[in-house]
Image (cartoon, rainbow, N blue to C red):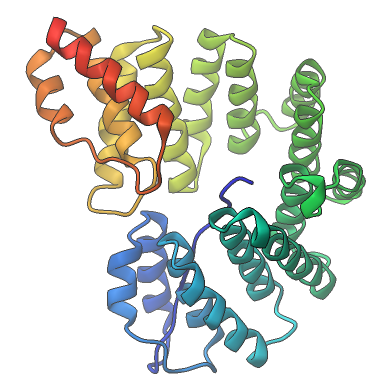
Length: 324
């Protein structure tokens, strides 16, 4: 089951609008350790905003057991809050991913129960609906996965909300290996909303899957230019760098994108930071900037969780540097 999300903190002081904005900026840059330090220990269960922040921080740091305890306390205080229920569900899914086969199923089913409660508590909450659809698509059937239920929910979402319904339907089509149909659906929606960043980024993702890397590169550039959410924008910069490093797309633009990406997430707990360093090192080699490549190679941060693909790429890069 795929890892799903992040989450954050709480304290005894009053949370002002300025505080919330400052903390959300730290969340946006995945600076979970710093945020947790600033928020301090959990002492006030009456402040829901702080509870949400604390949970997001714990999820971002994969502090799943601590998050489970806090979620239980928070939901005792706010039993019908859709966001707290959603975050509690996501944490249960993280526990499932990190657990043995024998206990993973029970965690996954508990996560599903929380997500269903979140949707029931607030049927208009798009994040809860999207997370539930994602669970049904990603989880194995034995743990509650159900592609038919995901399709039903996606259709209901599409009838009321766009482009969210289209994006959910695309996920369903991809799960059924219907890439060409998903591309057509996105193209139709983009005719109506040509400057929607998430539609553009998702379209680029599908083009990349379809091996149309040059067009994907252009669409990622459009998505990055259209994005108003900074973390979403950075995700498109990463993809520009990836395509430049692996698919011979514009190395200058890819280098610029990844250098900005690494600056944005500097001194953070960002999970893909090491991958961005690795891709930028590859681009430096393509650009024949061996000195920069060697310097950055020495700084590459390995993922906290085991990643065989990352290790394989690192070995290949080591050989490339020796030959350069």
